[in-house]
Length: 269
Ligand SMILES: NC(=O)c1ccc[n+]([C@@H]2O[C@H](COP(=O)([O-])OP(=O)(O)OC[C@H]3O[C@@H](n4cnc5c(N)ncnc54)[C@H](OP(=O)(O)O)[C@@H]3O)[C@@H](O)[C@H]2O)c1
Image 1 (cartoon, rainbow, N blue to C red):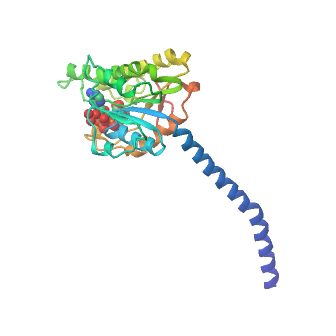
Image 2 (cartoon, rainbow, N blue to C red):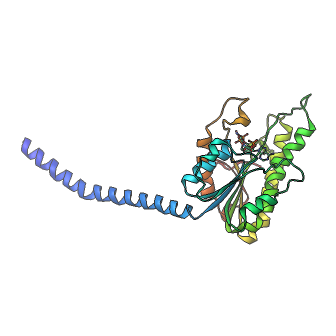
Image 3 (cartoon, protein in one colour):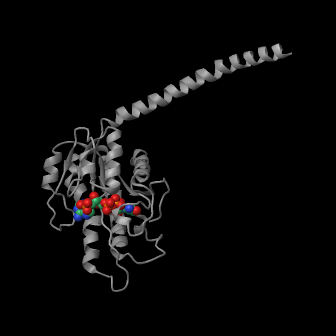
């Protein structure tokens, strides 16, 4: 009886091996090929990221570096962390301050030259808290407009000659800029500037469509960075950047002009 059972088990294992193992091997090979193909495809792409020296911009730079993007990391001042990222033959472009109303982006244009940009990531942003009380500082409201709302169109305009068919423009916006999602009020400058940049992104999506360039508004989630440290909560920049990159990869002309959370959820305007 024991011998019979053993023989049956061996036959079963043999059958199982013949059907399962080749399938497993083929699935694993396909997964490896898929990953290799993706990395090879990505290695031909160039990304430009503003606000690359810290926070979400730095995490995006680090993860796109691992995906072999050539990266132009734009910032006011570089950081030790940014200096240690392999930009895959790209470069760090410093002294780009988007709060200056007569901000001259000629040095940025010179640094990029005629290089085509496949992913233009407008990430730089500021937040200050103004509520409908003594904290309502109109200069602070104006400054957030300059950096958060005008900055992305200023940068996109300066680099429009570098955008080509199938390039993607991303704006790291915020769900705080959603009018229908606003149930808590306050935060005048930040909310207004992010609502304004959402509108700018939508117009850009329309205007760039004939050139085959798509535009996407992405919310990174509540992320622990210098911007949010006063609240002391949020996900890591690594988690946010991974979600953002997944959304960026699935962005195309088909969904140009969309407003999404990094977790894939469509957000209300
Ligand atoms: N953290 C969140 O929970 C959250 C949520 C929703 C949306 N966002 C958006 O995500 C983006 C990145 O924010 P973060 O959380 O990573 O903030 P962060 O750590 O404070 O980083 C902001 C980046 O923007 C740059 N920047 C600020 N003012 C600038 C100026 N005048 N000119 C050029 N660059 C300037 C900063 O450079 P310096 O180091 O020179 O200041 C820094 O690189 C922002 O657009 C923000 O609104 C963040």
